[in-house]
Length: 505
Ligand code: NAD
Image 1 (cartoon, rainbow, N blue to C red):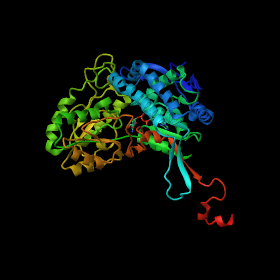
Image 2: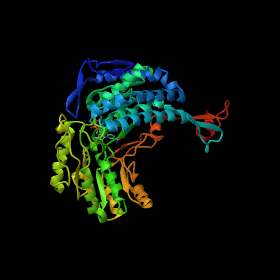
Image 3: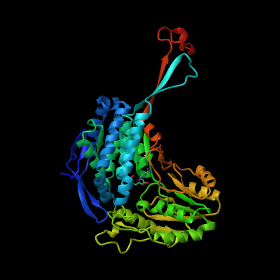
Image 4: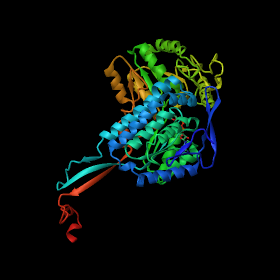
């Protein structure tokens, strides 16, 4: 039997096949747990249970405030179990306990609270102004979509699960979540906590750990599914779009990035260097919106690069369970190999990095050095270089010089991605002017990584489709129905006179 269980139709269970997948702690490469390896059969069972829960169950018929109460209860449940959830998240993903305790778990609670507020405050019926057919009243009904699936990546497993579950449930949908195979524990743990607390009717929330190729493909293509929300790589995002197109399902895609953090010549160098280093190396660079291209004005370039090199040496790599550690291992040895491969490419393209470029030395005993990679900075990188164009998803920063604000904007926008970016400057008017010209879903001025559930998040171009969070992230889980009521309840429809048919019937 697996150490954790799937949640299907209100029951915690093993995979139908009985198969399991092993999950490892990347910090020491020791096995953490056996997880159920769901397959297509489990996915179909969950989708059918979800369909039934939506079509026949009480959940979609609850009022917004009633659903809000349940969401708040889930938030409180996470809060009550925050220490265990944070520990599991750090052990399973390699992210630091500091990040898990201060960002991931509280961020998930905030997501449930925000979408509870949406369920409470966003009206389900809105009167529409009538301009063309004055002899009628018109209104819009906001309704849930139905069975919503969420397929999520390994970099912020618990937070991404919350971002998919909370808005779907708040709007009256049912939700089926598939976490990434490296990092499924905390989504399964949440399913267990919610089930034991008996917070939701059967089939309203279901969680399936299993491969993307079988479970994920079913969740994206099954005709009984009404919406797919996907966070992950652009490559798999394209596949999700294809799969969903078979039955024309709406999709939300949160995909990759290669964000530019622009440092203007009037920036405070201490603050800007912190924004650049934190903006890139937080969580070992395994963040979709990382500012992995630092665009630096030539007038301050040499001085700024010196500050970056200096400060990057102070970043502490180590045991993720130590609260003082800045960066733990990458999620898996393979991710460190990817970083290594890109560094070799970078050496060919632009020469030696000014720091990093290898696995770290002197890690505390017991840690798996093969899963770690040093913060690495390449300078004088042409924006056309592969290391400046391709998402590495590791701790690798490209510093790119520019001569004018126009050139900075052009370089920033010269990417297939458009997820996020930053502008560091002491002149807010200038910075906001640049922000307005950046083709990205988010821009942080004199800051970085500031994401919260009350503000929209998502990408331009190949970084995605749609926006999660904010009020936008609630509306993507709702249908809009227009209801037209003829003012004359009996007798001839006074609008038929406008049609050619009216005189004959
Ligand atoms: P991935 O695309 O490899 O996998 C994401 C999820 O999709 C996993 O659950 C995986 O099992 C599943 N999957 C894989 N193949 C599938 C298929 N054919 N059909 C259905 N599902 C399938 O991504 P990853 O490696 O887990 O995560 C890293 C990527 O996620 C990076 O590109 C990063 O930029 C992106 N990301 C984006 C955001 C955002 O909000 N824009 C946030 C976090 C991560």
